[in-house]
Image 1 (tube, helix red, strand yellow):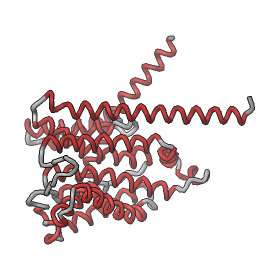
Image 2 (cartoon, rainbow, N blue to C red):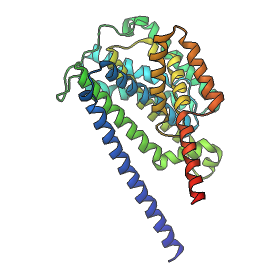
Image 3 (cartoon, rainbow, N blue to C red):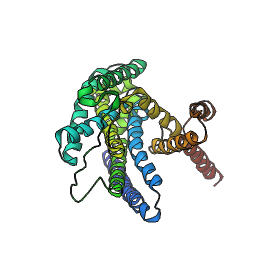
Image 4 (spheres, one colour):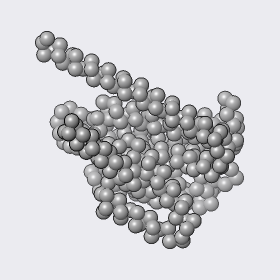
Length: 339
């Protein structure tokens, strides 16, 4: 066999592995959706269903942030602005324009795409700490606009009066069970799409940029375009999380676009880990459980959360999924050596 034939055979093997991985991910996603959709049949707990909806909103937001932080090496302190834009864009489209849910959903994505393209075109040219703080500056600008434009956004009172939810395609989002299944569908679909991005050639290009952007540019990669593309894609997924939250609370509030939302996203990634795809989802579940538990037990929840942050930052020095994956790899390698 010639070297060319060997190279062609290797390429075919890689394509086959990629296809098998893609099919496996789709099957896992379908199984996860079926399990989540059947959950109400086994429990009558509204609290649990609400918890899953909140996990869907924050999980999409945190995982989209990890596309920037973990895969591209872009630490954004202002990613929460797209969560807020998603919530406000969707809420305003439903309240002011009176359109259907699908139209409001697509229109909000287009609005966020424009904002993300403009903001990203400025920010991704910057490096490290400058990128982080300029994204924060844009978030504070959007938050200030929400507070100031009282006639349009409701100011510090937010969008009040509820979000209209006209039925579409047999789906009535005013029904809590329909809202739950709809949120689960968006969560699973969003995670599946982000997983495909992470495992695609583009995803490995992002890893190369994260590890050494200068070397990536030397081999012909358009680093600026790649960074801008993932910035926009991450913004779109974050806005979907914001739309789920707007539906859940039937409104939108300035806190959705405040810098603390971005801080929670960073904290979630610290808790769950940034080197595994499901790390942010695990971190989301942990943070929401911590918030719900600690706030019921003590009024000093900030101190408790601070201690948890110190434990992960100083003690483990990695997220929970990062720690678990490293432990698994070490055990697997040790077993191979013994064998």
